[in-house]
Length: 239
Image (cartoon, rainbow, N blue to C red; front, side, top):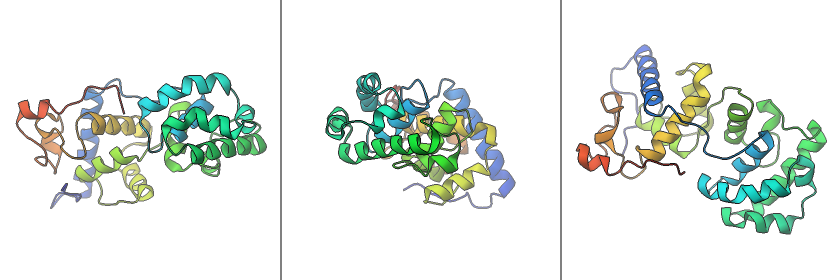
């Protein structure tokens, strides 16, 4: 089990410095880190993010090209035939609930925001099917507004790193926001997610190949032999 606690004796200042150093190392490790959902505008990203719940980005990216050709505007989604939309997104799982969320979201966007995806967190989270995680994905990647995306990878890593012992996503977001400068929130989120997908796996992290080894209090929960750990590294792209 990962030790989801701040290392014994570490001061608040030391934690901040360690967290920021870890983020800088991840920036060097993953210079091309980015959102792995394909999109061209805020609406496409919002729909893709809704579809990504309990589904891989790879699968979503296989579904959305056809979807984005048929539905180009919020009005198109708002007027969509539910059965047809469900069939188009079936392979992403939970397709009935996702179709309901997409149609409801689009109707709300049309009714409340003139068909344009809102740019404020407070407005986004009021849309059907949109929580803080989805809202921050859209804000950070479509609008350039810094946001922290607490997905399962992010939550696992900040616990292993000893950044926080919180398990509630909203509380995690608040804690990490106080460790990392606001300007870096979006990219830091991408870097942690990439690291979680490629190296710091849930069951067997590649500790012996990790560039954060000397800074991570959970070092050793996975293989520390470089050769053995190297076999666990997944290059991507994937999700």
